[in-house]
Structures are given as C-alpha cells and as structure tokens.
Length: 207
Length: 209
Image (cartoon, helix red, strand yellow):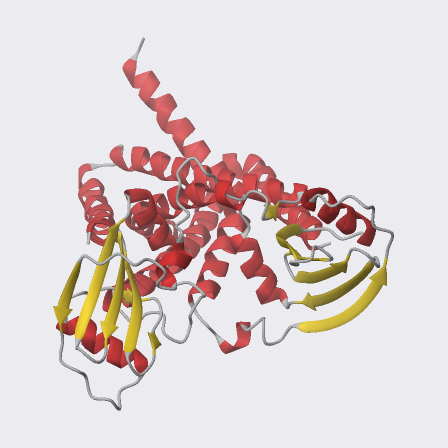
C-alpha cells in the first residue's frame, strides 16, 4: 500500500504541474492541424528581409570584428536593446540582416555596417501565434544557431522536463491502474484499442 | 435530486474517463512526447537525413495531354503507384517539366516529369526509424495558404484526425484530473495547489513575456 501511495502522489503532482503545459501543447496542436486560426506567417518576407518598412533607426558601436556572425549580431542586439531569438544572420561587408523572433513579436533588424545605424521594424502577432511559437521552439530548424536566446534555452529545458513528466505520469498511471481490479478489463480494452490504432496507422502510412 | 449522489457519480465517471482515455491514448502520447524530444535536440544517434539511403531511377509512362497541374500530379502519382502527401508541385517556365515531392513517414520521392516525353526521374530517399518518428510528429492538414501546394493522402488525414483526438483527449484528461483534485482532502488539495500553480506561473510567464 505504501508503494501505491508513492505512485499516487507522483502521478498527482506531476499531472497537476504539467497540466498547463498540456493545454499549451494540445491547443497549439489543434491550431497547427487546422486553419480556424490564421497561424501561418508569411515568414519568407520577414526572414529574407523583403519588407522595406522601418520603425526607427538606432545608433550602435561596431563590435569587435573577430566575432562570429552570431556573436556580432548578439552584440548589436544588446546595444540597441532588443531581446529575442535570432532566427538567422546574413552579413556582408556593408550590412547585416537579423530576423529576430519572440513570443508575440517578430522583428527585422537591418544593421548598416558603414554608418553604425540599425534599422528596426517590429510586428506584433496574436495569442495563437504565441502558442505556436512555444509549441515549435526550439525545434529542428537552424540547429547551428537555434537556442541563442536565454529564454529559448530555458523554454527548451522546460519542454524537456514536460516530456519527461508526461512519460513519467503515463508510467505511474499504468502502475496505479494495475491496482484497480475493477478497471482492469475495460482498461485493457482501451489500451488494446490505442495500440492497434497506432500500429495500423503507422503501418498504413509507411507503406 | 440528491447532490451527493450526483457528485459521487461525477467523481466516478471523471475517474473512469481519466483512466480509460489515458490508457487509450498512452502510445500516442509516448510517440508524440518522444518525437518532440527528437525534434528539439540534435542527438547524434537520432540523425536521419545524414543516414538516409538514396536511390535514383527513371520510369517512362504515358502522360495525358492535359496540362492542369492538379490532374497531372495525381495522374503521375497514380501511374507510379506511389502513396503519400504531395508537396510543392511546380511547372518549369516552359511547362515541359513538372516537379514535386511525394512524402510519407520514412520515405520521400523527389519527382521530375518530362511531360512531352513521359520520362519520370525519381529520387527516392529512405529514412531510419528516427526520421519516421519525426515525420509522424509533423504531419498536419494543409493550411489555406498551402492549397494547391500540398495534397494530403487519406491515411495522413486520418493521422491528422488522431492528432486532434489526442489533443482533445489530453485536454479532457486535464479537466478530469483537475476535478478529481478538487475532491481530495484539504492537505492534499493545498499540496496539489502548489504543483498546479507552479505549472501555471511558468506557462503564463512564458506566454506573457
């Protein structure tokens, strides 16, 4: 019985702790899977600097030239007081372009490397896009620079913790179910339905 | 009606739904959880693109004179007997070449069809199981902006529905769990409150940052 109580407590607390994360990931998965919300951004325009709009120009001091592109971009961002995940760095001898993203915002920064002025354009996104940002970050793309903002790193670690907790919660849930004699038969049927559905679907999709 | 009876019934059914739904979705939750970890990390053992097996081959088929993109793409896919989602069909400037991708979990075909000659160049890439898992995580319905650029296969549509079922199921499991938590004794309630509030504080902070 002591064993049961320990598992019950673990399941109870991990389940409650991860429940808001479950809501974030479940709601954003529904949004991603459907188009009842216009979640898809015209990211190419922003990412490849096709938008000529400028909100303000801010002066910056040139960072040390021996820095990597990413560190150079981070230095400029710090000076112009902008935080966010640098999505890419495009640099030549006279200019540098940095698309920056954070939940609720996407920012274009064009740094003129001859005059030392950074031209900034910021766009606000909605709550749904914030949820999607959280669902997709850090994600598989741009692996060499992804996670360059502390916030993304922390969120990434929290997502790992969430996944570990949900797996842990599932395992403790199974152990607890084993204690309930009256739920065994229907529980086994539910487990079997889930297993058969996923196996058949994966076989069908792969072939 | 006796409120205690109703409450007891609600507790009983919340518990049952929590258990059965959790068990039914267990393997899906594990798959999406683990594949989510794979997508967020770049572990050496789970590399799939670098470890793909690629083969190239040509086929010749009879292509109708029809030059409507959707019809042509589907005709070629059917004649080549391929299954999967059709992505990014593009005509060359002179409309002689038609290229597109057919993708399914674990396999991707890059197709280039010469419409005049009926010659089809196929580049087939096979991925390992890690790649398949990543593909399964990212299957979704095409958005409105992708109409004409993505065509979902029937099975992929069913998989998309299963993603909806898992998402809604998890929300129901959460709500049921909260209801069951509200029914526990005072001491456990406050301990649970600490857990749920810490989860909410973290999520709201990141959402409003």
